[in-house]
Image (cartoon, rainbow, N blue to C red; front, side, top):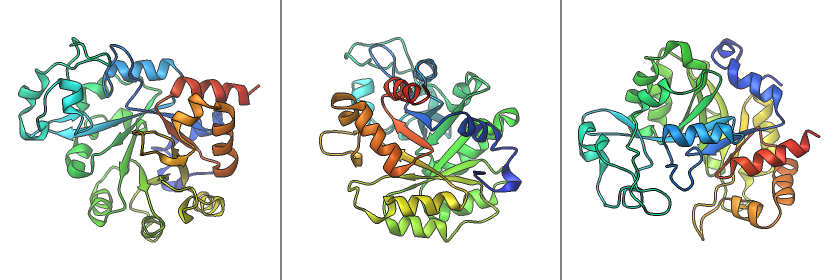
Length: 289
């Protein structure tokens, strides 16, 4: 199966090669954070790749003076021990802060800019840039500074007209995945597929697995259009899973084989977004033997 449009095969080549090499790709949510390794950092990226991830998903935000950092806004109290808006301060003010680690102790790690993160990204690896929709033009401008790494970047957008317009107008056609929560969003983006945007895939999120947009016939239709499908198995909290009962918690605590096997058989994803890359990698190795 050839994913993506023919005119974008050059910039898509790294992803396409990895899709050929593996039954599915593992996307590590915010890298892999544990103990003194902090999410959305160079270190969490390196650990995720060592533990079997193919792609690292990372969140971005922009300070008031226009510098893009890695951070999921809303986590400041947990990560820095204080509530504040990083979007309301300068880059200098933000970069001087220190993270608290996963056991609540102050660490030596500090926020990293997207620019510095990319400079330390291994050349055969990809990053999936999330939550950049509020500063999409500025995000694209940063990526443009790395012409030799264009095939390593995947941008996530929402199915919104203004985000589609921004990508359509941008000269470099970076790989783009659209996050979809409802059938109406899926239909919207499928009706707006254009040769001016390099949409390479759809990320499916569903609180209820009976939702129409995550049924297998719909997924097969998405793939028939040349689009990859990413399933998001994250468990955000005790009440929020992003793919019904087929989530990370049930996979790692109950039966990894049964949960992930059901995901693979019933939904046939090309990529799986998880907080537990090493265990999903272990499951994938079992499939290959």
